[in-house]
Length: 213
Length: 213
DNA sequence: GACGTCGGATAGCGGCGCTAGCCAACCAAG
DNA sequence: CTTGGTTGGCTAGCGCCGCTATCCGACGTC
Image 1: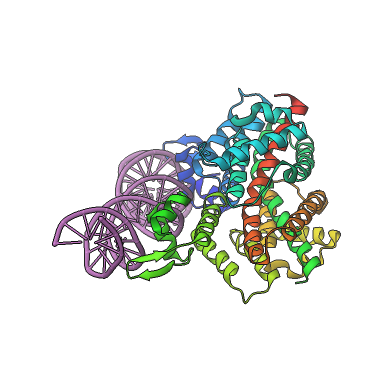
Image 2 (image 1 turned 60 degrees about the vertical axis):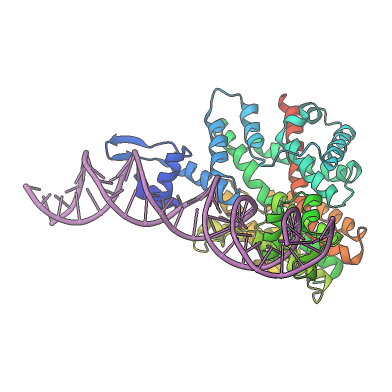
């Protein structure tokens, strides 16, 4: 198929597709001659993934390029590629280390990981962006005066661990090996909105049960 | 305290505070005379909440104003005010109703709510932005070829329901009535990053357990 | 009366995600 | 052989958003 058809079938304007090509989010088509390139289903699929990342996942274009780069880099091992999306995605400012709230948050996160026995997380520790974003979010809560501590978070963490096990089970049973990395990216970015929405729905439901409409 | 001190204690530049005042995110201080206004602890607290919404919660300024408006509107009942944040926060494009993926997503969401017995959610249905964002996210997954259906989501939904019950328990035991609405806003916006981070950490942990580092 | 700070107002900046428009090269239909 | 439509590539710029910089005249203080 050619650019116009790719545009039509994806619902993305040709100008935007050209932009994605320029930005390296989408591989160029097979060049037929100087003025024609041929695209196939894989381009359509990738284009939809890009749109999903950007529109649903709210991932900045630059980050999307980075993540997709890992997806395509076959020299990387599976685990690393799987982790790459998670690793690149959180976009959290560096914590201000002079802030006492940050120190307190870091302490509580450490305590939480100890109590859960999550050795890996504790070893990778401050390097992991996920770890960092937890510290930042917690520090913000603390600064606002909410005394969130390890004990309060532990049950949440256990619930999220159950969620994570389901995620990985799903991943193991879905898609070919080739598709699995893409699945992992889609999972990291797109399950999150689903989870968030389910969380919100559950809150609405439970609130209505307790207090009426 | 005056503007300069408010700025210093909050870590927000005077120019930005002025901007928030202009945008109605922050109530004006008590006017002492034509060129001086006096701020108090409540301004500091609100300012920190605004920063949290915008920086951690990634909430657009206009949306933050809307949410805070509900917080301040004492004519609204508690439940509504609690819900207001949830109601205003999701920022999802309108689903394209001509898209078959959207129709399929809507069907699966209905089935899910039926099977869970979440009557409220089903009645409020398409009106709720949370409901809408679930449909949009699910439609995106379906369009990408992931056959997520009601059966797959149900266990996730049940887990998130447990999370929601914890949220509301927390809310009931925290803060004065006056503070509770603000707490609900902080919860809606700031617990989410914590939850997301815990989810990510749990994935890293579980992945390391299964596949090594 | 000189100085510094106040509030208020306005203009503009920098980043991001496109978007519009032009181009010469090409090809297929008439 | 013309004509019209499409191609990739390029460049310029738009629209929004979250600030930020600067100027101002009014004030309180020394």
